[in-house]
Every structure is written in structure tokens, then in C-alpha cells.
Amino acid sequence: MEFLGLEWPTGYSESEIESAIITNLQSFLLELGKGFSFVGRQYRIKTDTKVFFIDMVFYNYILKCFVLIDLKIKDLTHQDIGQMDMYVRMFEDLKKTEGDNPTIGIILCAEKDQAIVKYSMLEEGKQIFAAKYRLVLPTEEELKNELEREKQFIREQIANKQPAS
Image 1 (cartoon, helix red, strand yellow):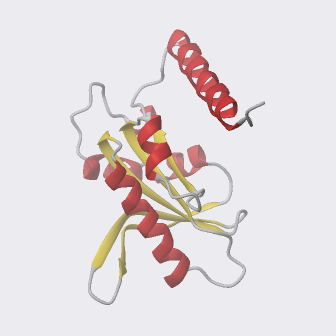
Image 2 (cartoon, one colour; image 1 turned 90 degrees about the vertical axis):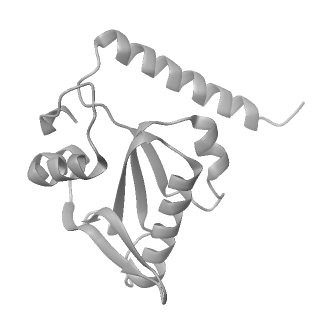
């Protein structure tokens, strides 16, 4: 997120980070990858009785799906995951058209706890992702450590799914 020009340590609100992304939308779209188009900011979606606002909505014309992004300036909570799950389900029912692939939800958060992610997700919620953002590029050593942590996490997940002999 260093391209936003925000300095570390952060004291920014979610709306300030969102505004910085919108100001730098072209760079943000390039960071997301190919095929993304911007649909809306504080995108309004409603049920019969309630109105909700999704931080940012994109459509990827290559993947043929909506991509919902929710920004969190604090640690990821199970409530955040439940909220995104609801947004994804609402988009599936109310916005997705014939030929669209399943909606993807992305939560960009300051910190995430793998156990909270693991136990907060419903089995069918495989299109919701939580990613930790940083306002500055990590050092080479930090990148190596993060890669090693992720490898260890994947090894543990694989080991836990192996049938008992």
C-alpha cells in the first residue's frame, strides 16, 4: 500500500485509506491485476429492511465476477468475516447475472489470526479471503520470515488433513 503515500505508523481511519485508494485508483487497479473495473465506493446494497455499504466493489471482466473489498484498520475479527460472508451472499442473490462466476470477497486488514479465519468461515465460503496490508514495503528479512511462516502454516494444514494410519 506504499503507493498510497501513507506514512507508517498508521493512525489512519478506514475512510482515509479508502479515499487514498480512490485517489490512486489506477495504481490500485494495477496492483489488483488484469481485468478489474471499478463499480463503486461505499456501494449501497439493501435487504427489505436494512441498507448496507460495501467499501469498494469491482468487477473483473476476465474472471467474470464481482470482487468486494472491505477495509479494516484493526485486527480481523469473526464479525468482519461474517459481514463479508453476508455481502457475498447478497451479491450472489441480488447482483450476480447469468454467466457470472461466484462473487469474491476480500478483507484487507491490519492483522489477521489464522485461527479466526479458519473457524469463522463456513465450509462453502471459499471465495472470501483475508489479506494483511502494509503501508510500506517489508524488508528482505521480513519477507523471508513471512514466507517461512506461511509455508509452516500450509504444512500444518496438510498434516492435519492426512488420514490416520
